[in-house]
Image (cartoon, rainbow, N blue to C red):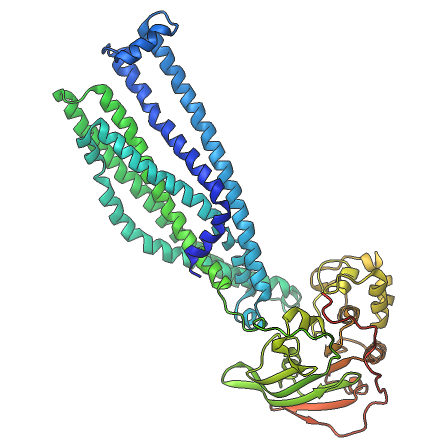
Length: 589
């Protein structure tokens, strides 16, 4: 969908409110049209002594006042005050309605962008920088507000411009022609400024995204920065990126200011031309002084919309730049789409089969080369091998973080690409090598992804993961709020919380990626015992390089050059029973 159509789609729910605001804005413009006539009345009829029009004279006869001219002055001043107050009230009502629509558009667009970012695959997120995505989802979404705040004033300015020209033509057509000679000059200036504004504004937002990315990475890795005394490097890098942003911002701001000032200068030239020609007409007697004053008063009302349209150009350029960055996300194709004809089985046991799987991150370098493997329920299937050979990649295909280039991944004989993503991922509990903990309570971290889990479920999972002892020693126990990324816990403690999170999910498939890499020998033994107990009735895929961890495996496969070979040897002495009936039924959200 094109950017204008997508943005207008967000405007559509607010069309009624914006249409009313447009009508009120036009009424405010009409009020402005009436105000210069009070000047004409005072100059020509009160001060100039010209005969009053019959209708006005008849009206004054029934209105109170010492004499007709004094009464006319008093009522003219009263009307001028009334018009000023009415114009103010209408302007405030319009501003309130536009701001409300703008706020709603920002929230709707931000929600849509964030939802899309959550749906997009890890492949998409691997190709895009986090800081840039943050910039797009938190700042560029304000394009919705800019649309609302630019479109309505632009329409009002355009309508007012046409209306004012017709009014001026009615006052004096030759002077109106002189006043409009500025339009070709403004169009020529716009032709020169617009592409340059577009380029510098886009450059500014792109550089902001790169700066945000580096700052986010530096703060996330603050331990590394301190450990290696990298503060100077980080500061210099931030300074360099910030200077690029500042230069782009200065260039964009200068061009915007130059364009707006050029508009003011050109309209100033037009005003001078009108004043000169009008003065000559007054001296020749072909134009009254009152008409000239009315015309010059209206002239500011003619040029004000032109200047508003000039400012709207800056808004349009910002809409194009921000909107392009937002729409790039919304129109991104998902590498892992939902199935067109989803299969929803009554129940799943958890048997996982990789069948002729070929996969990689770079089209020229496959990581997995024709992998065939079956992981059965009630067994621990271990995968070992050097770093970087594709062990984690193989596991990541089960919850469809990625899709294989060739071959299939089957869950109970069903291609995982045919299962609804939410249903599929509810069948898989995952413990990552680097567990991520949220800055919420310990209980909420364990409960994450399983909102229906009770407090007793959370505590039971913590006991099985051997996390209960250190959790109970925390200041508020399970209600202790953790630091960002779990920085208030040790690596081993964080891994046990992550294991508890996987266990409370009670899923038929349990994928463990180096679950004991940060544990000491004693804690590792406890956690392995917990994994052995959890394997009862589940399909457990264990990725590890520790020989002690492999002792609980029923079958062990070694990965080299993207292929698997089974290690010979007796299976582990812990045979698993059939799937436990305590596991959640299929489709639990």
